[in-house]
Amino acid sequence: GGAAEGDEAAERSEEARSEEEHAREVASGRARFGPGGERGGGGSGDGGEEDGGRYSGGFRTHDAGVGNAGPEEASLRGGHLVHATEAPLLSAEQCASLVEEAAAAMAAGSSSSFTYTRNERLGEVHVHDLPQAREWLRAELRRSLFPLLAERFGADAA
Image (cartoon, rainbow, N blue to C red; front, side):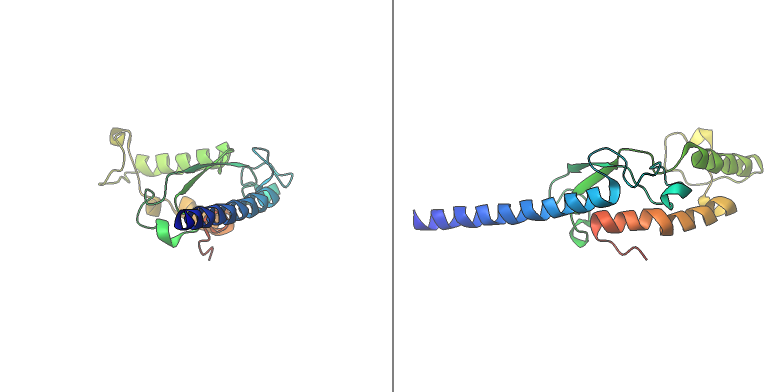
């Protein structure tokens, strides 16, 4: 039994280390984004100005299993985890603004010759053909989405 006991002790030690690391990540997430599914920081959680453009809602995290999250998994901290926001990242007004600009561009003749969806018959347009949306999204990525990815996955927010 000595080798088996040693293996069990090593496994328990790794499990304890993993649980401690998880507890630190949970504490960090709660400090930054609020406890449980509640919104933290007193903001609206929608990425609006009162939140400084940062998402302040909670998350639900799912484990896809190590090796099941795609080619970039190994380069990310917790790359096998899927984090779902419990509140919208964009407000209804922000989405409506993007849709309005896209609709105006399509009405003016812009369209995509390549489609990502089954609903291509509804019309699609590239973001590079939407100057206001392009600039807004560029700023939003820097202000809100990249820092969110850095917090969750250790990615460079720059």
